[in-house]
Length: 613
Image (cartoon, rainbow, N blue to C red; front, top):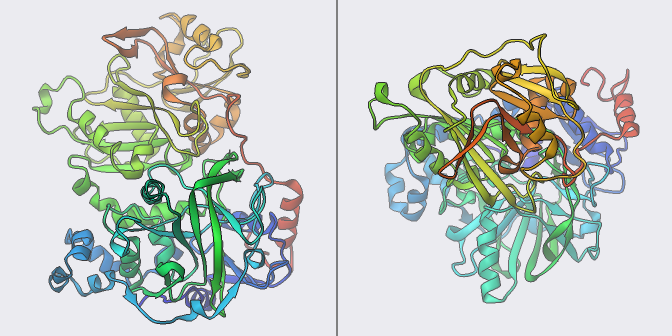
């Protein structure tokens, strides 16, 4: 059976040499988070901090820091979950119709949580100020919970069937929050809690919320799973844990996991907000301070042997990368069932996940040898952009399986080579010019506001991609230091963007109009204008991160030989993306040198991290 408590998981990892204790005093302000990031980068063990300064609770970090360790934590139940997936059992229907459980594998019996009268979570209480006050990055607005499980139910249809468990960040201190009475709750668009919040607004009454921390590790994974509507995360947690999740009744009749480590109970006043943030986020930048819902705290429960789990996020890869890889292993085979014709989807972690989505589709309805342009691929692209969190994709690049049946979607250079050999910029760009993007993405013209582009390519290769920068290359004035990112992808250092003119930047327009057909630049199908071409060329991850987190498609895509035909924009020459830092962009995350020196000291001889970092 799977772990019923976080303590069980921690003890097992320590016993098997997959966790180490750090017993010396560690400052939760910046140092603990910096240690976790460094150990993650070294693919090191989980970390148990037994002596966080100013706090009586131990804390565990890097629990899911490697994919192998994540698999190990769920080794007892993975086979059962895979069995359900392979049988194409719809868990949503199983939950709605329990009689179907008789025809399902025994694992499906764990889908339904069970009510119990009492549990360890009810035994002790504390206050917000006594919880670990972990701050990850220098400009963060205060201490945050970084692995919260935020539970709400529909005000119109209360109960488990209309519940949502999501990982939405929670700010414990700082800003204008009244200590021990108020905390901040930041949720992004396209999240289940938003539906419940809107219902509470319409009813004009507070929304009750319980924030779980710790408990069975399956609860943490369930909170980030992209489940179908109507499938409660608590049900999936039971499936992954290998046992029914026991629930006790909390304040306001909202359930709490009996084996959770901590539960913060409160209410969201739908009419009241306060500034939340800044916060160093998973795109590699700070998400800035904005008004977000306020939680009025009623009580803070904890079990007697409570352990506080935490992580830090930042420019990928980080610990949440392992979450993504694990979730893909669990759900990747379901993609063709959810999206007919789509063979594979890859949210590129190095680009911040949501900014760049790669997809392999198929052209099935027209004899392929007669196909002249993308057809069904565009239908599939629209289906992808209408699917849950995939709808946050900013750049969606889709190719046809018909052209290369063995292409691995996770081989990013091979994917770009395939697409760039075939793409026709005159027809294969499809924009949504005024739409929603990720709340954390500041490349648009306002919070949640930006654009999307679908790039679809099919058919035989139409060009050979240059493999080096030609010596005879000619760059317009103000542009220099051309570097190769990938075959066919050129990086050019441009002048700093001091005044932003969306879609009409004078420097970019000059760059595009000054290139004639004899210029070797025209042999590159894709050109990126960046602030530091050396940095971008250094690694694949560098240019992916810069290109797709610092550009808003409709505003920052230019082209040599621009054309507009029947309101369709395209270009006859290279596509040019302005990936420079713009004045409205949030600042990138940078480490504190003094803190990093303290981490170095822990890795010196006789230090707890010696031989790890």
